Amino acid sequence: MFHSPTSHRPIGDFVLQVDGPQLPQWTRTNGFERMHVAVLLLLTLILVSGTEGLSLPCIINASKDQVVLPVAAYRLNPNMHLPRLAQFVTALVWLTVTQAGRPRPGAHIETCHDGEGSNLHCYNGKDDIPQNVDIKDIAEAGQALRNYGREEKGGRFLTMTAANAADCAEWTIFELRTVLVLAKHIGSEKDSSVLFEDIARTIADEPVISDESDQKPIISCLTAGGSLGVRVNETNPAYKSDDYKKSGYTPDGIIIKIVSNVRKKTAPVWICGSEMR
Image 1 (spheres, rainbow, N blue to C red):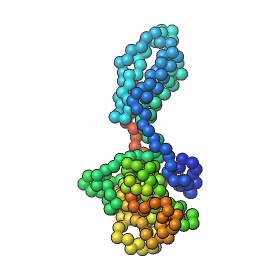
Image 2: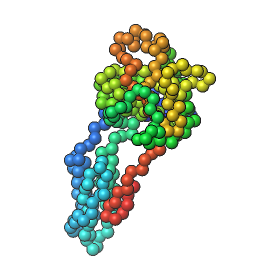
Image 3: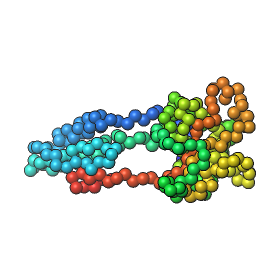
Image 4: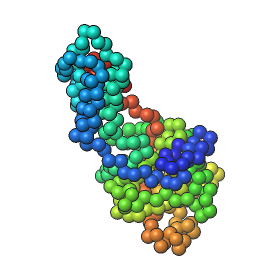
């Protein structure tokens, strides 16, 4: 499905993005801010649980994106039991620490990699991880993007500028079952804008139509997935229009990636011997 900050349009089991990826840049919460929030929640826990004292023998077994935060083991008043509210607040502490440092779904990811360019790269090389995507899903995702682009006269554009897609920003633009389609702005100094029609032909050629491009589409990588610079049809009148020229846009600088849409489980976190997922 497309990730959209404003509106969604269901098409079968897809959701198409109407206005393009305009999510604000997600600024990761720093450790001090996360600790501050977590400590406030812990104090609330102490107040509502009727504790006489507080000891700190346990810590969250945190991953590198989480704060290592002492979590309380309480000496409860003999006449008190930890109420459900306190248990709820404990869960809030854990959620605050584990979630605050993660990007929001669909947020921009900024990572530049040496050698990541516009040539076709299949994820089946020595240092690659095959993505195990379904070829039918790749073809269907390409066709859905093609149909979406053609809904507007002159074609719809995906635009990634130096201002809103700096530092090799990577946007999730479509997902369908096993397939996640990403657009990455490797020309970060450029204001890049390409037709969804060309994004579609980068993923898979249109059925029954032969494409004479020198580059094979990503679907030729089969189940491994891969990346490829957008196969721009420079003869398309949309790129020669006055509006496109006045904007200062270029069709260069964007690559498309087909990767696995399998959701990765987060590492289990242990709090005082209890596993929380």
